[in-house]
Amino acid sequence: MFWLYFILFILLIVFIVAIVTLVILLKTKVPFVSLPIKTINKILDLISLEENEILYELGCGDSRFLIAAQRKYKIKGVGYELNWWALIRSKLNIFFHQAEIVVYNKDFLKEDLSKADYIFVYLLDSALLKLEKKIIKNNYSEVKIISYGFKFPNLTPSQVLSTQDRTNNNKGLVYIYNL
Image (tube, rainbow, N blue to C red; front, side, top):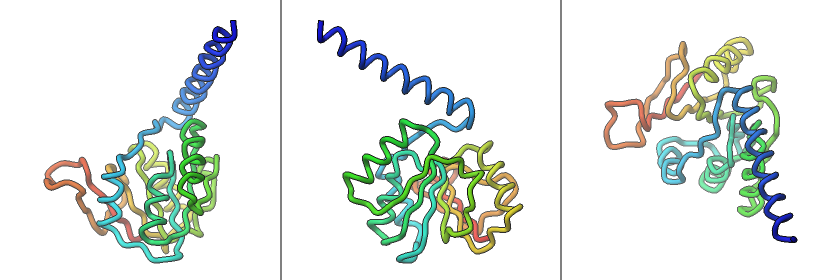
């Protein structure tokens, strides 16, 4: 009888996580897709961050990018994540890596991003359009934005770097914006 209750309990948890993830996906229209650590390391090799400066990751998922950036560049990391499953994974990763990173369960579109020196995003076009409007409206002119895989619809990147050997497609491109 114990095993039956245990299995039902596990199924209930899986069901709740799936429903919450679906609701957040419908609300944000941005799925949680984790970057491979190999790609994260390539991105960090291509860019340069200053020690003790603040890196925000918008839609930080499991925070692996922030953790790797903190280890490599000794930055201060701040993440925003709405997906509860990704947030739990993020908190666990931060704990197990003993990283000094803060992650908020808040909508970054409603938050003040002006304290960031760098902003990293791996977001779809629809989310980038909303973020672009926020950036223009709030005049984040001192912030360097790093976007992996997708570019802002109306902003011109100052650099386009590639994590791949071939640069003839959009896959693996890193867009740097100096506003």
